[in-house]
Image (tube, rainbow over all chains, first blue to last red; front, side, top):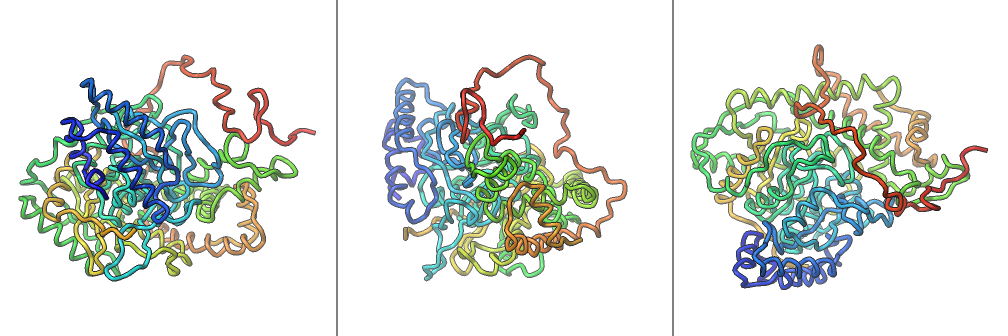
Length: 493
Length: 95
């Protein structure tokens, strides 16, 4: 970490516009940091230094001409799920070998239009399927955090593990990420960073490799709440190329920071107090409640009775949609091809070689639950349960609740190659128990650091909001951040 | 509900993923673990509940019925493993 890479986006923006630093200097500092750290952390799968310097140079010219955009000269890392023209875009899968799109995703285009600089593409779980970044074809990412007095390598969470690790380790000023069941919020919680999954429809999904289309949503991971607000303001837009993107004006999210939460009603759902949850998580939750109370919010107990069914319903809906979305990888139009004796043999060999174990598992589950005779019992039932999960939230909001406070994850970061988790896929899935309800209901959710556990590892709190009420989440998360402080790992890499 | 080895092989065939005997056996256990986990949905009363089709109530946007994009065959085949004059090449399908 140099003085330049330690700047938040807001701080760098001020220094750039005051001409105390240049965009090229800032970009060079990040490129040097990546070169020094990436062999160890494996956060980036591709670094684009030439493109970055070229973009930074253009930013400096625009700043000099008084034409700076909202993110002018800010160096960002991009999750490998976002299509970036002419640049490695593989969802960290072998099956997309060599794929370089001839188009740019809407979210990244929005960022470049505002003057941001691309440093490279970030590691992730293959096709965003995972909670530890260990399913990536490019190998696991190491969490820049380690437990006190330990040299054990920890996971950064997933699927946006590269995004969270790069932000926490000062290898980018901020990062794009995506969240289908918790893939922004869980890695943010594991790395002491801030991550927001906006309301479904807030960001365009166009040009983002699809996993589960009714659940996928892009959002930022940043070092603090303000930076997350700045990034989301640029990323969000209505897009004619994504019919599910919503035509509601994008507010200036940063403006909601510092507003009072006095009189706001914060719901505490009793169903999030799960069996076997560590005492530290409960203590963190109580601490969060105390902070919001001190700031003048009213705390109310609420019930979301279908919470426990969100994860099992998710593991029907998400694999079903994935099996359909991933049917396109057939060795014909892009990526890997393994030759076979006829076309079907070619498809089967290509997909067998190209997909990793977790992805195959989910395609198989999805194919099974959608197959003749099982559709009603699994998929249709899961979609009905989803209606009930959403209704739980609607009833709470109708009763006057403004936002809901929960823990972000049931534990802090765990070890890479944890045997217990590797042997049982369902155990790994339980990582998303507090986050997945939000995707099922299409709501916005933010993870903000709340403190450290006894091992010295970060823990996150989650705030869940009404549809398109990200502003309430930002201002409330800001209150928590002011009380909790910010957390950074000590450098060992 | 649980799956047996024959079902796993049938599903793999539907999903167009080649699996070895050993993989199919391993997957049988894994898939049954997941299916056992989702089994708890059967205890939810879903009588009269509409299945969710859209998380946010919205009317599907429709665009004008005009050509808005195209003339980019070269872009479309650019990433193909095997192509010839803007066609994708595949193994012979019809004898």
